Image 1 (cartoon, rainbow, N blue to C red):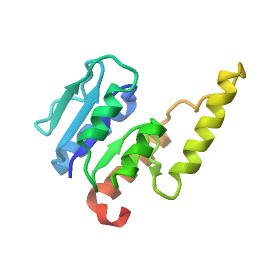
Image 2: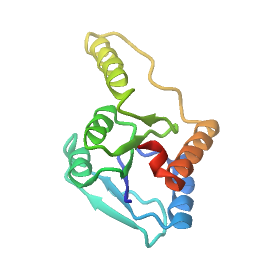
Image 3: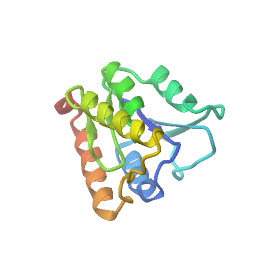
Length: 151
């Protein structure tokens, strides 16, 4: 299994947690971004730099990901595309996107985007905190130790 990371806007708080997991479990990992980012030293990480288009990193991830693999992203439309390929997606707060929940989450995202496009001011998500980091670490560990449980 390969782990794919949507590197655009990847939170710094998660980098050490993710790096430890990658090195401990020896997970082949691909970080895709349109700007140079680094998680830290690891022989298990490959970095792919894409051109600076709005969804270029997303397109490359969807092109590369295979059934059963995991993508870490907060991008809901990307998560939807990944799930369509029968892969898995988890967000920065440790919440799994699934075939059962992604359409509802995508609909809510599109509704809120519609409000913003009409000039409404909506609150974004709360800042990432240490509880979120812990939840992310736990869910990532659960998935990596038993990916078949998420099938």
